[in-house]
Image: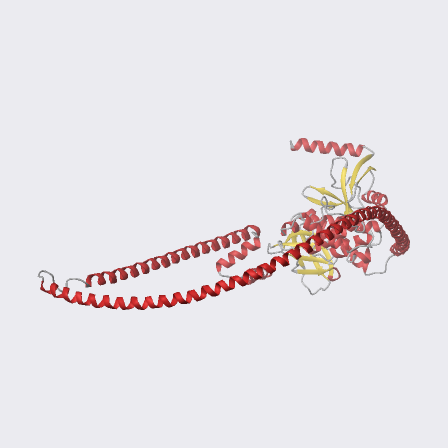
Length: 591
């Protein structure tokens, strides 16, 4: 199978050499371009064609990249395209990308198209997490990306949900927080609303100014080994060479600025960096493949040339480009100011129109209210006329009733005269009754005296009866003592003692009942307290379980483990920091 594949590739290569043209597809950050190229074209011919098509003049930042086996390579400008290790299938696919990054995007990037291509590439790298970006910076960058796409924020147009289909944040950042897409959109929109008045180019430049301060911005990483076989990462960027630990691409352990490097070379897989100071030691490392060393050398040479170029006077071409860019920006500024004035005048005219419409509606409402008031006045007049007629009829009825009342008053006067005569007769009868009452009082007093006399006679009769009974009792007592068989002390005490026992038994039963009621209330209180405590414990467990379910994140798990072990979050963090420090010390000791 391998031989068949090699034969096929050889056949394709032979056919290319025999053909006069070959097809390529250039993938840019915005679209794909397809060209038919001549066999004799060099890399520079194809690269210049792409730059002319895009209108790009700042060509020194860019290159054509292609995939080769398990790595990538950049098309060389001075060699024929087909003589390089490009893919054999047609169309040949190249990626038009930024090969070198500026130190300061605002000062170095002149053309808008250059800035736009950098913006798209950096944005893609951040979203694909090739460049590490903190969450807060991600939100701010996303707001500038939204502004570059949608323009000024308008609440009437950019309603909630307008970013639902947009990819604006790295997945890593989204997964770090328990936030819904709506919450992320709200945060981004809040920042987006503050960028009002900026153009698309200004928003893209602000994006690049923030992104260029990220640790991984513009760095190309390569896996290397030092003489002791320690795995390291080599970072190549606009400022120089940096050495990283494999698991930490953010903080370099040592750096070599371009102005301190005298020479860079490689022999087979060994790479040599000679510092400008000849007394300093030469730094050597090994890469995995020869092709990687070639790529490292290309990036080093290109970045070193741009580093030195930035520190020289701009060439005539660059000066012309910057002058044209300034003129273009000034023209755009004037145009933007003119459009702003027109927009302001249009908004003022719209506000005046809205005010006139509002005033017209207000006058119309006032007219409608006046018509309604007139209609109500007419209705009120009719109602008053009707009420006047009713009042007139009521006046007639009242006059009739007044006449009837006068007749009734005459009748009452006659009745009153009759009543006076009757009252005089009643007074006479009352006088006669008083005379009868006096006679009855005298009779009552006479009867009371008679009753007093009878009472006195009764008391004397009772006294005589008592003396007779005593006499009879004396006679009877003598007869009783003389009769046999009856003990003198066999009668009275038992009844009194029995009553005392009954009274005692009643008091003891009442105390027992009261004690039982108290004990019952105590038991009920204890049961209620126990039930309340169980409810509190259940509520506490429920809250704790909800807390664990709602906040079960890696950070919470670590905190809970530390709590169980008796260590605090601070001590745990200190322990991790100590371990990280030891690992770094061990790393430097192995160098």
